[in-house]
Image (cartoon, rainbow, N blue to C red):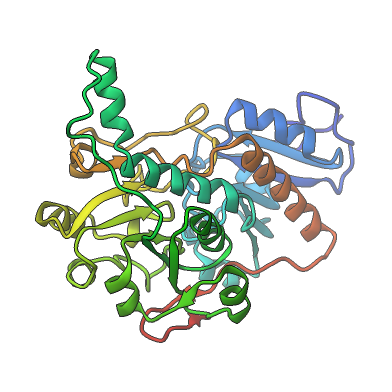
Length: 364
């Protein structure tokens, strides 16, 4: 069997020895995910797996690869693309594409696929896990119980029923958050660049302007991609307009929040508490799936001295909102399906448009 230099066939069933086999380079893949991908890949593909997030400058597999399959910790730069002359598709195992130089891909005629539908329920449920933990001070209560104290003093929480939840971005995840909120008896307002009349009817939510959302929300939940338009969407100016004592939730992207401004708002009491599954700097990119770092919950780059990690009214989880068995399986399956669809000449869904606060529309 003639193996192309730098490419290794799966360790399971042997791939077909076909001159036209599709050469796929999977980057930032842990052992468990490799086993799953090997089972999913068609026998006619020639896959190569790299455990590290970075592609070595002298990697022969990169030079030969027709498909590059990455996770968000691998920056797909113009320089990397120049070292991959055979590349025709970048398939990212994520919803976001901010780690990919889309302009460079367009210049080369390289297609890009992503996985936008992997886990609306998964992320929405984690959003409410953070909110409930804050509302009932679960971390503090557990710590007290572990000390052998069952005093309830100082652990008074608050009810969700009757509160106003402000959802920023009413896409798949935001809509699911709104549905869960209704089950708790909350009122929901949302700001979205593309108002959806059908969502307003089916979810019984009010689409409002940015200023009104900040002023009315008891709880503010972010569900937007990271773009130049959404960078530090919540800054000192925005925090000055929020309802005093608001609870902030972010299970989207860390760069949506100016972290220094958030610390100031927490210290002033403008923000009473924050539940964050993301920080702006998580080792260069934010993990969404257990790929690389040897398994689940990669925490590379998270320092214990980070002011938000140490703040008494902030609950941080290490970007695990995606991390359920069901969602991870969907990510891997849809990624392989995207590659197969591209190989068959089928149209791929384009990455999301840009979000603009100023225009109230999605920029293209």
